[in-house]
Structures are given as C-alpha cells and as structure tokens.
Length: 398
View 1 (cartoon, rainbow, N blue to C red):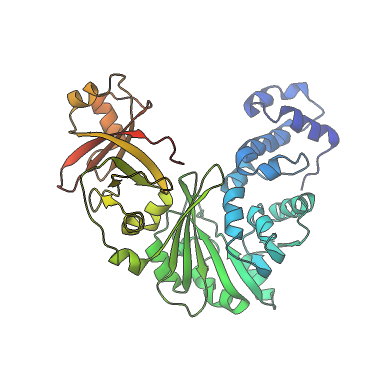
View 2: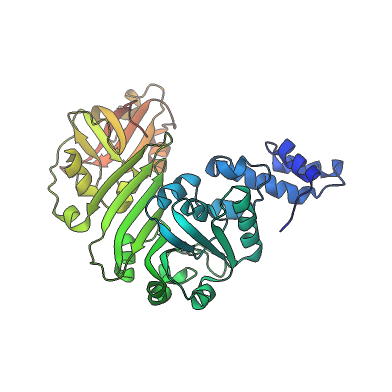
C-alpha cells in the first residue's frame, strides 16, 4: 500500500475539489510529485464525498480505485444493514473497502474482515485504525480458504459476492457470482448460526428464496428511492415464507418500512377505482419487493388497475412510503389535448402499464422535462389508456 508523504497529502487536500482531468494536464508543474497517483486519490474522494462522508472527511484515509469506491456500500445502507444483526463475532467474507465491516463493528464485539485482494485488505486495515475501529481484524484470503481454516463458530457470516464475470461483465444469478453462495451454503451453516447475504436488486427475489431455501427474512433496500441492494438472512431449518421488508432510507434520516409475507400479499383484499383526489406512487423498494396488494391494504388505498401499481384515495396520507400527488384531472393520450393543458410544454412524465415509453411520448408530443406538472400515463380499471394530470404534494418526503 502506498504511504503518502506530507507534501503528497497536502496536494490532495489543496486540489480535492479540482477537476481531475485538468490536474493531469498541469502535471508538469509538479515534477517532484506522482501526480497520476494523487489524482486517482482525488477521483476516489470525489466518489466518496456524499457516499462515504466519514472516510472523505479524514485527510489521512487512503482510497482504492474509484471503481472500488463505486462498488462499495454507502454509509447509510451499511449502517441500516448493521442494525439488523448483533452478537460477539461477525465475519465479513467479502470485505472489500470495509464500509460494511466498519458498521458491523459497532454491533459486534469482534469483526473479521476477509479480503482476497492484498492491497485492498491492507488499505482497509490501515483505515480501520485511523477511524478507531480497533475491533476489526483483517485477513488477506479468499472466502473459501478462510472457511476451510476457520475452526471456530461465528454468530453471523456476511457475504456480498462479486457480481462481475470473467470478462468484467455484470452478472446477477447467485451461481455466477464469486464466491458461489449456493456451493458454499453447507459449509457456511457449519461455521455460523446465521448468514447475511447481499445481492443485486436485479436478482429475482422468488428465484433467490427458492434456491437458498433457508431464508428467514428479506430486506429490499432503497436509498433516496433508488433500489440499491437486497439482503437475505439465512438460518438453518426455517420455513419457506420469509418475512419481507421494503426499506427506503430518506435524505433526512427517515426510514420508510413496509413489512409483509408472501401469503399475506397473495390473500390481501384490493379494490379498484378511477383516480380520486390523490394519486400515490410507492417507492422503489415496495415495487421491487412485490408488495403491490399489501401497500393498498395497509394504507386503505384503491388501485387503478391490477398491473399499473398506482394507487388512489380521497384523503391525504402524510406518511405514505412513496410520492403523493394532487390529482387535477384525467385525459386522453392526444397531443393536442396534452399541449392545451401544458402552456409551457414541460412536465415530469411517468409511465405505468402503458404501451409507450417516456422517450416515445416526449418525441411524439414535444413535451420537455421539468416544471411543476406531473403526468402519469397508465391503464385504468376499465382497460383504457389514460393520462392523469397531477401536482406533487409538497409535504411528501420523496
């Protein structure tokens, strides 16, 4: 691992808000410094500024490549994840930059950070001490080799398998990730009471539950309404109906949580209606988790159509886990009618269960992005395509 001199650290601090490309063009002005290497640190700090403020705020922290920073958990998701488990010993078998390990260390007496990349392992260990996380032990090893040598028993094993193939393409299926959790499962249960697995939100949840078979709980996690990851808590000898949680972490620290079970979702009673005074769009975690009927049942809402996943009611629900809108009218998908209601020719457009994309609609109508108007192009309970004209409820939290 590169240890930076005082002059190199000063360069990083003085130029951390500069454009990296411009700095490279000016490298000749600093012949005594390894500018290319320092610019990589600045690029990584740019990536970490909002995502990892604890790391970015410490001038002595060393960063790996910007790609590694992109792939790591954010502090917000790592902190929530850590709140789900606790105990004496957690082993992070795919440690990476160490953000998850750092937050797990606040909940466990000891954390072991296992990372197969020697440089990344060294960087993580160095930063842990800088940040005061002295109860984390770093081990440079593959997950498989560590498990083979480990003779104790952990409370929790945590894995975030690498989702890159041999040609660096993105993969999502469990058997295509590294390590292969499906092959490791018997060994994992020999070494721990529980396994916490992080996967891509692109992975089908029902397929994962079926393949893993020992899932007791599932969390679909969104950050500021962008779905980031899905967590599976695996425990031996559990049933096949895990509790499911749709989690959305908001910028102000508020957490929107909706919990349900698949059987409850399938049996929930749902009524349908034309748009009423308010229109509701669930957050991305709810949509990914499949809580389409549960959200209607728990909040007393009507659906517009079985497949539209838009909801309506006559009353405002202040704590609705998603976006709320005033419904100002319903219209047809006709260019002349649309433009007559949009004198500025600007609107925010969403499509749900509609035969055309947002790009198609904008191309055909000439409506630009932005403004205070929100248009929902969808299908109603009568199987007819409609446009719902809305204004956002300002008090809504996302």
